[in-house]
Image (tube, helix red, strand yellow):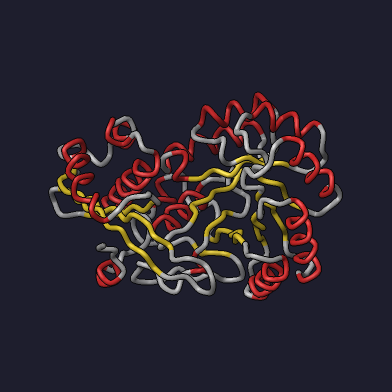
Length: 350
């Protein structure tokens, strides 16, 4: 299964409500036999750059086997983690398609057939966030991540307004979005003690795990980290530092499914809580997240994505959210098919 061709597409799809459109890089890898695999990530690229970037990467991939994923992860042209994520995702898609099996079967089998989601909720005012949070809860999203405004008092007002509007079964997380210095983060956490939060994610500006560990020693609020985790070595550092009992693994940040599986192994061995995040997605990377979460017991937490925000996606058959959960696609590879007509319709050309 030798790689022979590569396509880059910048694609943008509008969102529902006030959210800005989601723009992603969609990657198509093809083999000499015509088999194709798809990947997706977010990059800050312009359409005018795509041809030159494709021409720089393709010679490093052409002639290699799609099966040699660990080797591909060390190709110099793929040092940029988000790009590496998309290329690796497309290779896994090819591997699954060649085998005629969904990736979860190759990763260890269907440990779970439905994957619970956590949706991100943000907005300009506490009232707006609370209303949106209630609407999402009524749609079945029983795990929600409230995003920080960067201001402690507004964040506290927002969380109070959300709690008043939500049914008891809804679980809340709070993403500090690396907004605060140590003293301000401590002040925030001290005011949240006793609140029924699953965790406070990345409250500190500094990614230094020793600072997070110091904060953990001074508060009873459960903490979690995402921005400091860029690979399995960072998971080991998290365990050694005792900085937080939970980690959120961002596929784009760690560089793909294979590194995310290694992160899960560390989390399981150390007894850490773990979940996945793919950020804004047009459907392809969400499918990848579902395949990995389905086969990985360590990813037992609600996994964050934003598919509910899109007016459309790139898939022939859209992923259907049922009571805050996504069924794992059972087709070969990622389990989904990219709609070429949609790809052309939403492509960014200028």
